[in-house]
Image 1 (cartoon, one colour):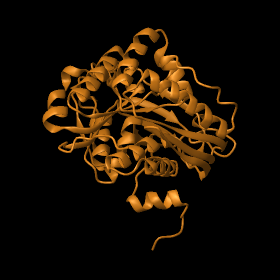
Image 2: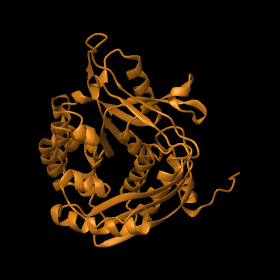
Image 3: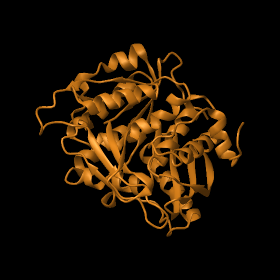
Image 4: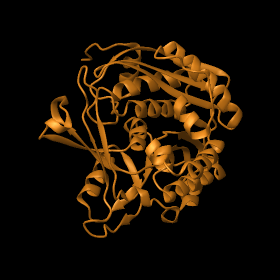
Length: 359
């Protein structure tokens, strides 16, 4: 099967997001033991978009910035360096206690010590994303978008961003854009808002063509029960995911593609990495195999980015999971949260297990 994509679209991929920065201690050290940090630009959704942008497809981010902020300037320059176009308003800071871009403070872990992540999102400007700041009929209509990728992280940030994501999904559906939705359930975002957010997520999922999420995402977002995954055995996790997706199909018949990664952590720097994609009535599985991990954050986003790139390129469904597996593995070898593929050949070499020197 192949998803129907708009041939006349100016943008291959569009992602709404809330941009921020990440502070990471050098040399794999814990945060509380460090006095030297690397600063990088990050967001889960721009991580997804980076695979397509580095491989030459036209990509756009919809976001919002703090006016006259040096962090905003850093973010804009970084996205430009990734060949990602940006559209969005600038919001007055409102004084020292006003808006700012989110901070993600995380170490990479090392060996038997796992990574720890602390999110500092107070005053996050991305929570103000509002449909009135964007001409969706222009973006999806006259310009055109092949795939819009929505994330549950953005949909659940605030009532405003939830409504924004709903309006984006509706505009995409109206203009024939393929919709990808990564559920990304976060319990802290949902606390006290379960009824509100379930309604939003159900409407978006109901018009989506591609749904990404694990057993917990589907169960917590929609109450869809599936077979028990059966402990930590990856083969049992695959069986559990298949059963859950069969239930999800009945709730969301518009979706023809379901996907998720499979990960077993041996140590912070050694994982078993796999992936599974259901396309129509066919299952395509990248059996878990060992990968080296420099920094695990962004691996899942890298998988989604690679899968969407393969779909955009019009490849056969069996290659979607392969290319996504490889771009996810690539992301874990980089200190940025996003993979930066040099070309398609590099990605396919990773899939084939070819780590030889290329001269």
